[in-house]
Image 1 (cartoon, rainbow, N blue to C red):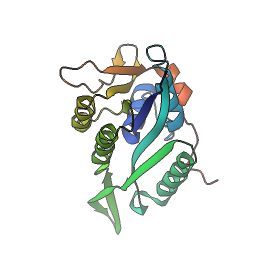
Image 2 (cartoon, rainbow, N blue to C red):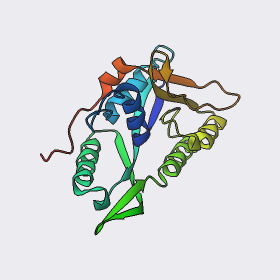
Image 3 (tube, rainbow, N blue to C red):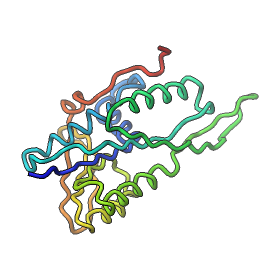
Length: 209
């Protein structure tokens, strides 16, 4: 039996914030709660399909995240560096970063206040999904994001014969809706709290080593 190569694409901030909203909504959660280990999540998503396709093999995990600078605070910037460095040590994990876009929103005394937003992360991820499909880099793409801007890339991958799957967090009676391609049945992996606990990363990267 030939392997079914599974590529997992993770929109990290989307996954992180959705996990916090669903699993840690009560009270003030520590900032690391909601974080996941990309390799463990990729392995789980590959494993969840074994019953339908025992030939599944994880071909790689691609993680996408905006990169803060000192305007987000030195502590946050350094914690980002530590977390990304830990991901890059994992075999099979590729990390893609792009500087955050900052907007000055007010002035408090002599101190500037900035608001940061991710820019271009969805485009980067969409390109990799489409290019991977058209260059035969995988048979299955599993997309961990609820960002509808990715839909054209999912449609493109499906149009060249690749299987597209999605994943979302869920609790009884509450979940973030998965991405859907009109006219196609997309297999979504609903991950509840027990599955989140298998892939969570409670490391406090804000603390100096």
